[in-house]
Each structure stands twice: as structure tokens, then as C-alpha cells.
Image 1 (cartoon, one colour):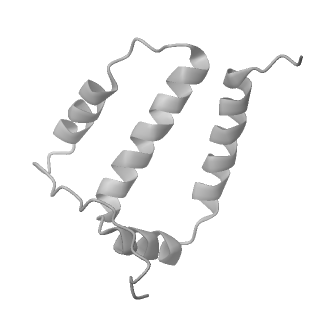
Image 2 (cartoon, rainbow, N blue to C red):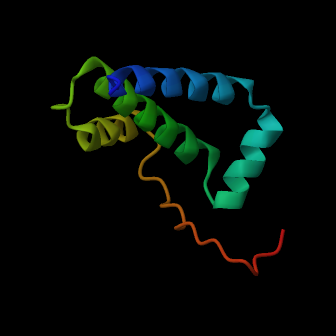
Amino acid sequence: MTRWDPSLDLACLLEALSEEILAATDEEVRETSGLQGWTIANTALEVRSLIRTARANVEGNLEQDFDQNLSDELGKSGAGSRPVRRPRFWSHNQRH
């Protein structure tokens, strides 16, 4: 039986995701955001939150309240409340 280290796997996945995000062109970001019905600002906030969560998991800091951190981050932007993005619905009949 092999020893599986989920923290190591998570760190590798986080690194790969970071590289993919940094390699994305502006057009790819806009296209992806538009397809999902998100604003780029909301997408950036969500990605930051996911990265923060993953890093905390790698470091073993599972006690942190991530919802509060996201609320704090939204409050710091000074832009007020942001529109909520549409839920993702995938359909076989969806036109491209």
C-alpha cells in the first residue's frame, strides 16, 4: 500500500492552476467570464478565494473562516455590493 499525501497533491494542483491562470490571455479570461455570466472582477475574487482556501489547506490552517475573509475583501474594494453571478447551467442544446 502506498502512502498518499493529499497536501502534496494539493500543492502540485495549486501550482499547476497558478501557472494556467498566469498563462491565460486577456481574451481567454474575458471569453470564459462571459460564457459563465460573470464579471471579470467577480471571477478574480472567486479565484483569489479558491487559492487562499487551497493554500490554507496545504498549510494545515483549516480553522480559518473563508467566508468572512471574502466578505472583508469585498468590503475593502470600496465598490459596494457586486451583482451575483448567474448559476451555471449546462445544456446539450446550448448554442455556442
